[in-house]
Amino acid sequence: MKKLYANYIDSFSGLSKEIWWLALITLINRAGTMVIPFLSIYLTEDLEISIGNVGWIMTCFGLGSLIGTWVGGKLTDIIGYYKIMVFSLLATGFLFIGLQYLTTFKTLCLGIFLTMCVADMFRPASFVAMSAYSKPENKTRSVTLIRLAINLGFSAGPAIGGLIITHVNYSGLFWVDGITCILATLVLFIVLNPKKAKIQDEIKIENPQSVYKDKPFLIFFMAMVLFAIVFFQYFSAMPIYYRETHHLSELQVGLILGANGLFIFLFEMPLIKWLEKTQNTKIGLILFGCFLTGLSLIVLNITSWSGILIVGMFLMTVGEMIAFPFANGFALDRAKKGNQGEYMAMYAMAFSVGSIFGHNTGLHLIEGLGFNNTWYIMTALAMLGVLLLFILKMKMKKNN
Image 1 (tube, one colour):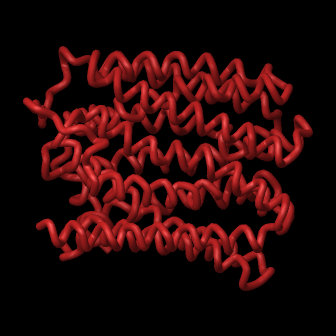
Image 2 (tube, rainbow, N blue to C red; image 1 turned 120 degrees about the vertical axis):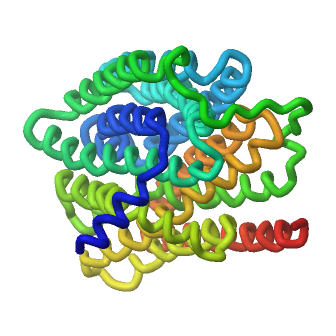
């Protein structure tokens, strides 16, 4: 037990203090994103919006994310990551507080679109900041630490969110979400000021390559879009599935989603450190993670026993733990060939595109074909992503 604990602690060694501060900022920010897992339930039950219209609202969520990520990447290359991070966090806090006052379909579409435009400017800027504050050999583990912060926030957020809904109401979620964004801005402003922070890996490229001419990266992008479409079912379609098919309460939904984040917090860093020592390529590991995520949906059709929800969540969690850090690491490696903001924006945009099509497609498939057929279709998309990653792996092997 003592050796296991020592190995766990050792997996965090060597990371810069700036990465730890960035992780803390991310934790504060993500702990407040308890609105998102409950958004589909809030819209259908509290505001009585149809599942089809919720799909369109979630599409606006994705479109805002896509545009915000693209703009954030461009501005990061022009004015730097720090200013973009400060603006995005502070403005998002006030926008989240304001969302609770929007109650019609059209205003919600506009409000969520604008909120996500501003919120996701943060993503490419934070990727570039993380790259700058990490030594080259520590980048994948730095990504993993940031993900641990995200998932610790997500594990606490849904559980606390379920309690707030049960004992207060949905309005409290918007207030907490907004206030935590503002608090994260204050921490960022104090501890990561460029005048104080130490740059570990400053990359300057004389003739940067455009991301749009990098063919391997474009194949990777398409695979990540498919992976994201499948993955995002857990944030829109899955809470409704838990509620309607298995009759779980909001608190139970929050606990299952929270268990995902807690499991990642406990096991992802040691898992990543161990996988880095194996002979597996980053693409090979991403491929396996994508496969497990698709498998997590198909198992739900095996039985009506509610315990299968835990099995599905476990498979998705392990797939996510493997796929995300190495996908992010692959993107950071390729970004050294061109403008970092543009590359990392493109990587983040894969998930924005996945959000645009994933939420809407999943919800409309449920409305038209039911949950079981939706899980079959989503698994098929995951396997298509696996195929693209296999093609990319062979292409990279040939090039090397």
